[in-house]
Image (cartoon, rainbow, N blue to C red; front, side, top):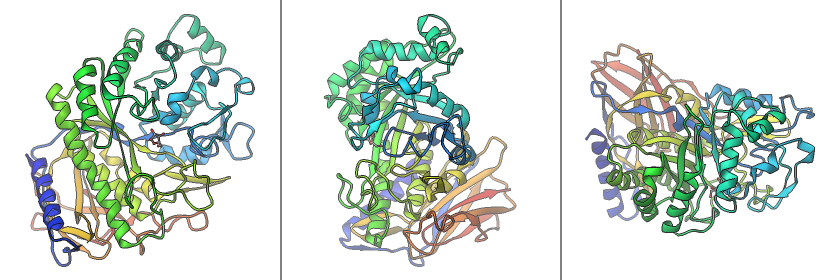
Length: 521
Ligand code: AHR
């Protein structure tokens, strides 16, 4: 009910804004009030919500993660040390690989055995460049080992067979047999854990252009042959809907739910009028800021409606919704390969990340995995590299600031906030979430979407006996502030002193265009 309250408040405000035509920000001087219900804790915020997606696309793998053992760039078994170290700081729980659209043309046998004998293919989806297959199954599991993450592999339903998929799973997981022997000959005697397996990717598009009924039947067929060895479990995640395609979710749930553990959802923020991506990643005006943040806030409606459909078949929420591709998709950066999806990452992307992480808290009972797209050098990346140089992005900093959310308990938060609006775009002025970590500490994330006005936020702390507060803030002078190889620390978190506890309430002076994470003691 509390969740519904926050949703209703925001929806009403957005509705009112829409009625006024050319909306202008009405946040000036208007405060936000909120209540955190520490006495009625909600579901666990699964750490798998912080999963990251690494696809064979542009420099997402080659150059970004993998440089090869003989590279002058410092590496361990081919993976660059600087990037691995930065990823370890985030406690990345799961890595989704090898795609994406790449997965639906990937033949796993081409990525095992001696690297210099693997076939060189054309990456037909992403730029038509050559794919050396240097990173295959063994290298992927080495990546997960170095990062400390679990594996989420997407199988090839597009142009692969159920037998090929089943044999890949057997090669990875079998304790004995010919495929296990082959794995051992290729350097890895023990089976690898495979907790998550995707039954294809975007079957409605690059994964085969299927209709929902056909995809649901195909999903049943392929799921039949994904078999886990005794005493192990592989969670099967079906290729779910594209954004607001609710019929897809309805059909998959009706036809295939009993054979599944999860259903995916892909949704990208596409400011500037939708597909194809046409908005610039930097150098945008306030209208484009508001457009993108409204796009991020739309995730709440999408999850609400897909979840309601899932509830009809699965009221106990046995299946999880895996939002395993999300983030902002802009026109590629100037002078970069159009097929490489390389884009700069600004303070606006930090707000997009925080808004999404807060939305996932509102739906943590159903959304138990998400994967931002993508990890390095592609779309809304955590990390950008150029040769031997590396920087972390504003999105990276949000993931680091929200680390306490991993496996914490969601504390319901009801937020009554004005609308921030610009031109035809509107979004709640303040978005947030709260959690109690397993060590008992309480953490609150707040984002001020208004790029011009500070928001005064007063939070009632029901059932929380907080005496002191500290925190960090991520903000910058410009909406498109970003880190570069020459100036890597333009956007980074710094201590925040704008919060205090007065008369048992938390008072926050939330600066314009900022993300703040507070820790209560
Ligand atoms: O993340 C880039 C692409 O977006 C993925 O390959 C595909 O699944 C989606 O359309």
